[in-house]
Image 1 (cartoon, helix red, strand yellow):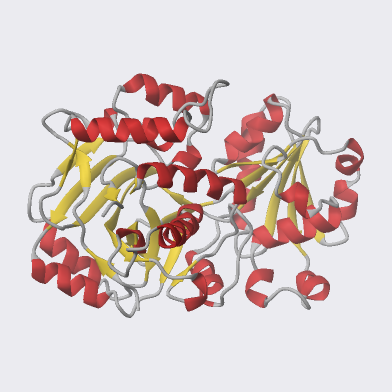
Image 2 (cartoon, rainbow, N blue to C red):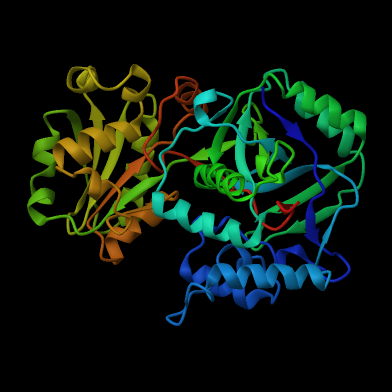
Length: 443
């Protein structure tokens, strides 16, 4: 049973912050160092100071990005830069964005969700996490005692009854927040304070399983934080705020739910592995070579990406290597995954392009070990194919693997079976913006 409840959200005071574009930001884990600096410059009260503070060589255990975030949070509350709702609310949001020249809108509801261990099968993950990231997030939440960013989770609403009821309860009113962010995406938020509408939604959600789309690190950190509070607070009970975490809940059937691919970009790959890669891959893949036209490189690139998309119904992976004047389209031969890995991988996992890439290409062909796969300096990611290819053309990267998107049905099936995908198997777009609502975890 999923436990959902409204809460008294903390948000920017509209009498002091006139445009939320200036103070909001994406989740911390997609912000580059350059973007971090830009958000610092954008506004003195930008949320970046809470979610991804600057570091210094002079940092100590008593003065660091986490302690400074806590001081800043307290200051903004004291100065009423941030204010708290007077009554519990559910927060319905919409985001309008452009993708491939089409205008798309996605809805999500921000609420509190009761924390449950994954083994209970109520809240389900689908990706692995990095231990270092969880330890960093835990230090932040210990210091600040707040959820600054919502965990992006999914639920099933095949008839759209749940979402339509939320829209009926909110969207006939003027939005409480309405702004266009620095990426040109319009965000709106409606406070749902009607008790009957709140009860109906929470009751409808009781039978739901929730699938974490984005924010696995934050969810596991919330579990760890609850355990830490329970072990250090003799008054801890089931009513403590640490038993809940702030979530953004989105219907799997929402037509605005978009999954982009997470392309892989590798560096520090030995020349011998690159030189022999295509020859080794021929044992497992049917390979199409697309020579790069010197006179029309852009046309060749478009042909390459189009060919990959045209093969989305198969296990297909695009490859581009540094200092090679060709793109390669790899289409998996029939039954290869079951023959090689049927004893260790379920059919659901075998069908994923990211599993083919990780288990067959990275481990079997390139000979990577688990430490290499965990090395964030070796593997980077991009959701934009052109950016991934450019990273090999212009930067110190050796090879890019271009993927088709993981399908939402695959995410659902993997999670329901209690299985885990490799890290960065999905890129839900756009990310849930940070800075609309904050959840206080203090008693």
